[in-house]
Length: 514
Image 1 (cartoon, rainbow, N blue to C red):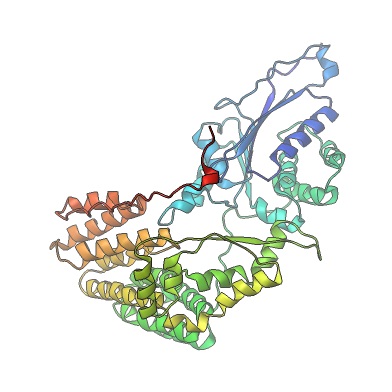
Image 2: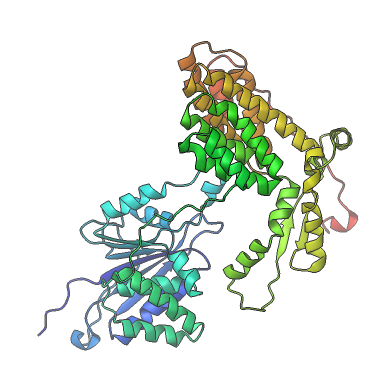
């Protein structure tokens, strides 16, 4: 009698919502059944809003049923740490989660993962750069897995015009770790009856990557830089250190697109005194945060971005619309008094805010930008760009920028490291609406009580304190952690903001009936 395998082959799949993880599991089961192999599949639904993935766990017993003589193997329903033969993830952080949970073993596991990123809710909520370190995850994958197959599945998916589950299936077949013939896998795809040709193209792409027919450098996607206008590019090469020229050029190009060439010239004029200090890293960091700050998000900017041709093309590509197929795009907006006042000249802005008397009058809007009327409504706001310099928000932002740059230049003359810490305070100014207001309040709190107040005389202590308070503000947007850090050096915490309670009379038809 032929000796049977001692254990099944275990497979763990992590896919995000809408990526076809369930279809992938069905394909694997169909391919295993075609090979007459006992197989079992279970799934654990993920959580909405990109806090996790839906995981699928499969066990395949690598012996045909005819060899089992009527017996059935006992297959588990859930994976166990250190007991996974193949792990595949459609997103890099999900591979990191699997490693953190102990599912990846250097003695056993073949890890297949995409180097592409779909940022988690926690990453997006961070006041600073909350992104996970992709290079660290890639390095861990190579160290912890027996074999690591890493490539950009999202790019392969887009090139094939399919869904990522097809690319994942091809990678599973191509890695050679499963007892599934390629023909059986392709037959399973054909049996699904939907999007067959596109799925087979995606399967082919994944198979070629996993089998080594296509070589890629994981995580080494080249950065795409925009070119500044020619006259500004020449000035950048002439006036700025070589190590900072690329980021300065990107900043100038972004500002020219955001407003105009004169605004990009102002950007270079502001950076010139910083470059004169002779510290390359300080120039680079200041250039980065200055460009981001000068491109602040206002209604004009939001309307411009939402009505660009490139955005419509991207949406059509994401939903995989065919040429000529209509796609309806609805923008969900909730502007308030502050956003409206920011568009007005300073005098009118103050009058409107005074009339609002601290109350928020946000109103929801559903604008269908794929229609002529909706597009023109949004585009009319974008056409206000030439008037941006007349708005109250523009004046406020430029005044704060000049104040921040002056503090950097003053500190840079005696202590470049302190100037670098002040430059990185620019990370606090980001976002839109409430996010922007909280970041601005924290920025001003540090500037008022620490950077400009002279409360800390020792330069080394001041440098460490600025860094600590900045990190505290980034960790807690509400500012409580920041106030705790400042309290340690004798700064009085901010008073608790009153939260008014308003009672609204219920309409008669809304009253509960007896």
